[in-house]
Image 1 (cartoon, one colour):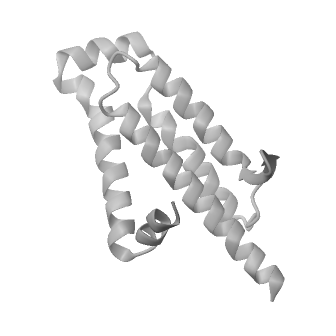
Image 2 (cartoon, rainbow, N blue to C red; image 1 turned 180 degrees about the vertical axis):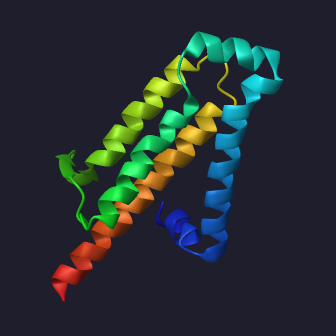
Length: 133
């Protein structure tokens, strides 16, 4: 898994992650306007897939405010960022609500979880390196 984060830390990987997230967000938001079956799925879901972006924005706000360590929770012998747990919970809710039209929501949820893990673990690892020196 570290190879994936090494790739995402490159310029190409970062641009692909940003472009993929923005593209899937636009597609998930715009599909109900153009595709009738997506419109029916959006009405049944009664919730926007853009809720997936909320924990990411919260993560950026916490990093900006200087909460570099984030809120870490011990689970299964490892430290997990609490915002990642929030991201997984929001992703589960959004996927469940949009289960009739999962084509854009599931890949967007996966990208958002990847964002959250990368943001928070990168910040946490930088904080640990700073404490060690």
